Length: 250
Image (cartoon, rainbow, N blue to C red; front, side, top):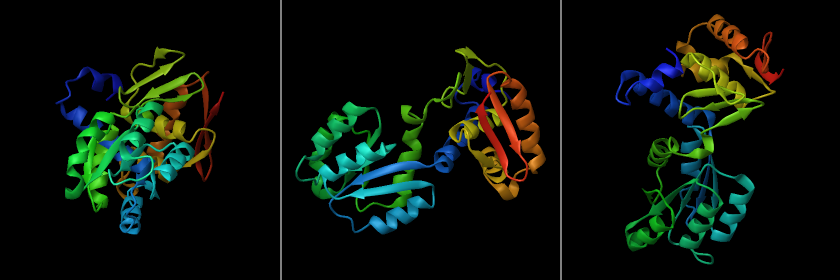
């Protein structure tokens, strides 16, 4: 099955369902930077541990000013902000974030602040999550919204551009046709770690979701060999014996 075939099918097809499940796994496996701006940090340890187990790195700030500083430093994929902020204020904080880019903003909401959610949505927030925060609910929001985020949409390496949302690879601006999904996922993990060695176990986890249930490393070698041929003249895919694979400039 190639990425082109998936794009040509209706979104209700089983192959699209598989593609969506793959994208959801990538949301979890690649890792997300999450910034939480909330003066009440009593749930910090539990939320950080719970989301950390899903590959989400959490930074927690207790003021809007510190949150803006952290935002500029971290460039996070998503932000949770509560209306219960002093100083800058939640609406001003959300507007500042949305002016910067299109990152996902969630509102941390409880009954005492229900009236404040409207202005925050108008300022650019996408959804709400209940306070006190629960890791599983926050993760559910991140997974459901990340598909629409431009922050992870396109990856570029040299003249190769990969678009996970469109399931498309372009080389020098032209579509690379007939790329099977496993080669597409292999290219994605290599591009995300370009110029570094990616272990075979990491690749198997990215392609099949569970190392213990994945095919042998020989399956990775087969996909790598085919991908190497596709990329010839544009990038070098090297096998580092005993360690994994590296994508570098040709």
